[in-house]
Structure formats: C-alpha cells, structure tokens
Image (cartoon, rainbow, N blue to C red; front, top):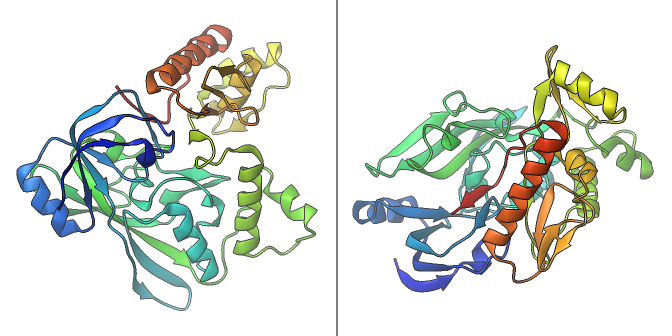
Amino acid sequence: MNIQENISLKEYNTFGIDVNAKRFVSITSVYQLQQLLKEEKNVFLISGGSNMLLTKDIDTLVVHIDIKGVSIDRENPNNIHLTVNAGENWHEFVLWCVSQNYGGLENLSLIPGNVGTCPIQNIGAYGVEVKDTITKVEAVEIETGKLVSFSAEECQFGYRNSIFKNEAKGKYVLTSVSFQLTKNNHKLNTSYGAIESELASKDITNPTIKDISDAVIAIRQSKLPDPKEIGNSGSFFKNPVISREHFETLQKKYPNIPSYVISDTEIKVPAGWLIEQSGFKGKRFGDYGVHEKQALVLVNYGSAKGNEIYELVQKIQHTIKDKFNIDLEIEVNIIK
C-alpha cells in the first residue's frame, strides 16, 4: 500500500470539487483493507465519488475503494447469482448484465457511481430499486477488521435509505454486493417515466431488456448532464412524501401539481417540479447553479467551491419550505 500526501480529490468526486486529501491510499483487495484498518480507524471512504459534496480539505486518511471483480456464484435455468466487488463501475456492470441477458437492473442504467455504494442509498430509477435484486452485502467492520455479511432484510432498505445510512453509518466498509438476476421470463418495467413513449418512438412493441436499457440511457442523456463534462452528483434531493391532506391543500393552489400515490394517506411529489416552480431551474450563480434541463441536478460549471453549492442547497430548501411547507431532504452526502 502506498499512502500518498496532499492529493487533490477533484478526479475522485463527480462534482469535480478541488479539495485536498492530507493523506490518500487506494485499496484493491479486502486483505489490504483489513491490514490498513489494523493501523487506521479514523478513515474517510471514497469510491466512485458520485454521492457527495466536498466542502473542505480532508485531514483524515482518505481510502479509495478500488476492489474489482465479478463472479458467478450459482445459476439455474431461470436465475443467476452474482457477486460484484465494490470498485466496479455501476453503469459498466449494468451494461455487462444486459449484454449477457441478465435481467433486473436495466432500468438502473447510466446511474453514476460504483457498485459498493449502490446499497447505501438503495439507488432507484424508473420504477426499480436496487433492493429488488440484492441478496447479500459484504463489508469489513472498521473497529474489528472482520468481514461480515448482511442479508437483504438486514440491510433495512427503504426509499433512498438503508441501515448503512443509519445505525451502521461509519462502522463498515462495503466490499461486495450479491445479486439475483433473471435469465429468462424477465419482469419488464416500462410504465414509469418516459420509457413507453421512448420505445414507441422507435416502434418497439415487444421490448428486450436491452431495449429498456437503451431507452433509459436516451432519456437520462436528454435531460441529465454527463459528470465528465459538467460536475454534478445526479439527483440532489429526494422526492418528498407528504400527507394526502397536505397534497389536496396544495392542489387547490397548484391544480397541475404532479404526484404519485404511495398509499391511501401518502402522496409523493416530484422535487424537481417544486424547485422549478420556485424559479431555480436553469439559474446560474457564477460557476455553479441548477441545471437547465433538470431542476433536481445542481452543477459545477468549472471551479465552484463546495460550500458555494451548499449555500444554494440551503436557499432552495428554505424557499420550498416557505412556498409549499415541504421539507426538502438532501440525497447527497454533504462533507463539511
């Protein structure tokens, strides 16, 4: 292991925020990680860097999780069980699954980040959540260095949530994720968002999982900026869930407010719509702002500082609270 000093983290976070790591090390195996944790307990973990906003230099040891590899655990005529190491790029893994005709992840195409972080916030898109396919998560316990296993149930998955964002936060380093995917009779989900219209535009009536993946990629590329071109962390805010009574009160004032029914008593409202109605969509403040095509996405146009973007986050939250009486939750980790 080569511990380096004063390393810029600009290339290690998709926002492209230029802060320094006082000490930095890249880990390529579980064994290396366990050896490191014998000496270092106070560590700052980074993988794909897609779900964080850095607002300052990092004084603690930054550990870059770069453990690679995909293995087939078992399979039968209908299903395949895979274990994927944490350092694998998520989108590349999804594309590989699609190329092998392994179904279940196609709706999650083009989500930035690495496999190891997907269970933490239970990534989801277009009617699918990653919890639907996860069977097991392995992690190294920071305090003891032991490799432990979490079943899907033990992960306590919820909407953009898991045990790793709550009571297990800061206690484990996720090293691999196991999935159960379909080999035939795929359960296709085309009803969410613009997938059906995208397929119709290509005259596709009996889509394959590749057709769905291609449709999702086209939709996301049409409205979401590429982090390689404009720094961003994808969707910055969670879609709020409010009471039916609250929604009906808002609906009287805003008849066109979009919604998704969660239950008899709860309604989900798109955060992007709330932000757009508040006048932030496309607004630029120097080198940072809100993306012109998708109000959920905050962007770094070049050399913005993390605390500048965080000030914008707080301004948006205060405005949404005043205008709609809704508390807008942040999906991205703010490092401050």
